[in-house]
Image 1: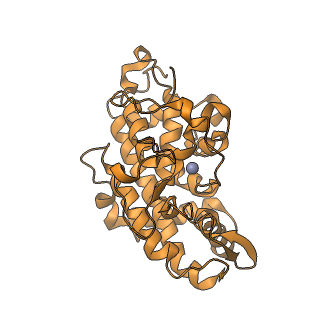
Image 2: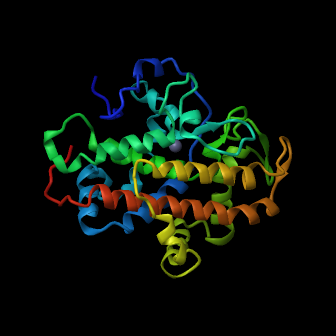
Length: 303
Ligand SMILES: [Zn+2]
């Protein structure tokens, strides 16, 4: 059974079952969120890992990881990849405001490890085989890189670790300023688009520059070492998921009722959190890639 999603330590992923999954509402950072996370990460790579990433990207990406960071969203409903659909999020018990791997990381049928935390662990451990070069053909290293890069974005979107009954805010219909939206989508995309329009002349490059300035010598400079602290690459995503559900409770769901209109007040208070999570995702993705590819060199064969 050849598949991109298989862990050497776990034989739990049974893909046949996944085919029966129904199509669920879209749940993912917008393409802008993923692009920013991946661009920020790629710029923080050390030389060896940067070469490894370039080596794994298909030629048409022209060395740009962010060009393919949205790929897992584009293919999640294809027959071949339907099993990846539950991997973009985690459903936690309503109002518990906590996350526990053993309790919450499963798909809607109860299949263990099928959540964004499990996916990050799995693709991280696959990439740790990269240095073995062509000798290990169990994994598609390019797909592992793209999935990991995408899911590190998703796990940092607070509403991707939301309540079960409202599907991470997807069923909370409301208005964003004057148009119809839902609470999940507000966090995936609306806040980012409104920020781009209000402050950056709709130019993603300008927003990226602003975020990067705050990493190197601004708002977040002193936080970098604590963000990237990680003794065990496989256990650290638990922390990222816990942070997300706590933010979802404190800022996402807080005070929001179905049918209401969210506008300036909500935007002003939540926008800094969205931006911080995008940056955290990028900084931590770079940390993981720098570590899994730390012993590799540009001349190691891909796949
Ligand atoms: Zn996603």
